[in-house]
Image (cartoon, rainbow, N blue to C red; front, side, top):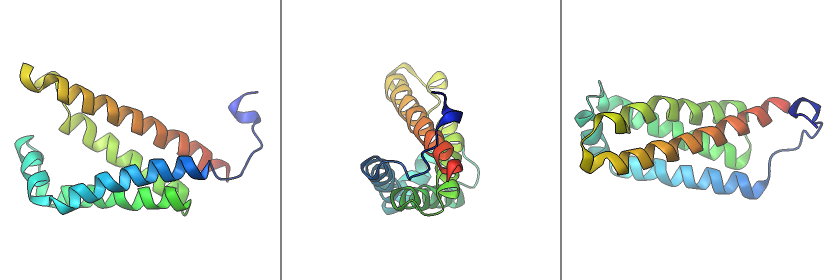
Length: 130
């Protein structure tokens, strides 16, 4: 059966939503409780307006994670999360542009973010069915 043949319009698994949403909420809260450090890291990566973009993007992540967990405004919630990862991942985890000492850590973070982006896209597709 293809994706288009699916007639299940129920929300995705509660456990899956809670695991995904709570993990992302924890990341967002870590960002928001260490704004100075996160802003400094973003500035070191030459992010313009880091003092505005870091809290804004962390807010997108927090709002989206809560929305997915509760399955409220799921299209907006998943789009918020996808926007966060699309914007943040190539800028903050540019493994191709760092020294050898930072390469492995940045590559791992880049790949983890790609996995999370993939999950957000899967949740978005499911949200479109509702």
